[in-house]
Length: 228
Ligand SMILES: Nc1ncnc2c1ncn2[C@@H]1O[C@H](COP(=O)(O)OP(=O)(O)OP(=O)(O)O)[C@@H](O)[C@H]1O
Ligand SMILES: [Mg+2]
Image (cartoon, rainbow, N blue to C red; front, side):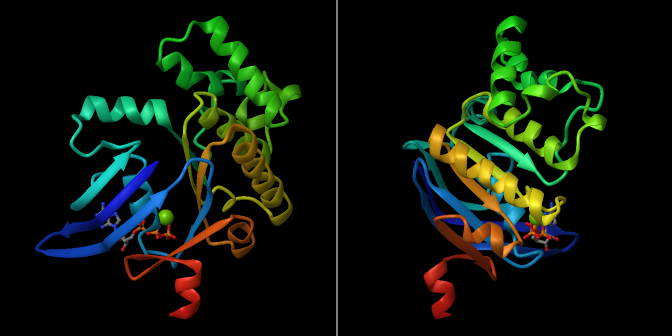
């Protein structure tokens, strides 16, 4: 479903240039559950931003369902991002003045979904992530794990084909971390969404069927890491 070839990313910092990604080739298939590990500064977020069409690589090609997404114009790219990709971050990024269901309904409202339908779909998704009792709660009334459930519901309410999560359990304690991981597994299994989780936590990575590691700007499969 996703095909990346020769992806590089260089950043210009004043007069110098720093290369972070060195020619990444990767195929990701629908329904996979994939982790990406790697030391701090190894380029995980940089790579996720490219996967999520939030940033462009310096070189390389990227196809989603056969379509050359880097050649598409910026409007077509944002449309693809909104239609196909959901994001979850360590810091949740909920709107503090909106209730749980309104936070989840937001991406639907941006698309012009009528409010009644947006509310129905967001409440159904919140029920799926175990928050049926918290639909009207404001974010400051929710625990960290509950906030992350709201963020996951928000990322999935638009039925994306790809869910990208950058350190989704980084701000949570180990027990809550395991619950959130179980939720990703369930959503991956039941909705068939391709899930890519960036993590520092070996326990989180161990639960993914496919494990990748960024080493010096190159992406290795687990068996390649062991051999290296
Ligand atoms: N916009 C930018 N301009 C210049 N350098 C950048 C930029 N974005 C990232 N970098 C550099 O690229 C490298 C990789 O950063 P990145 O955020 O991808 O790392 P990471 O693997 O996500 O790290 P962490 O685990 O700490 O989140 C870092 O050295 C960072 O300073
Ligand atoms: Mg990062």
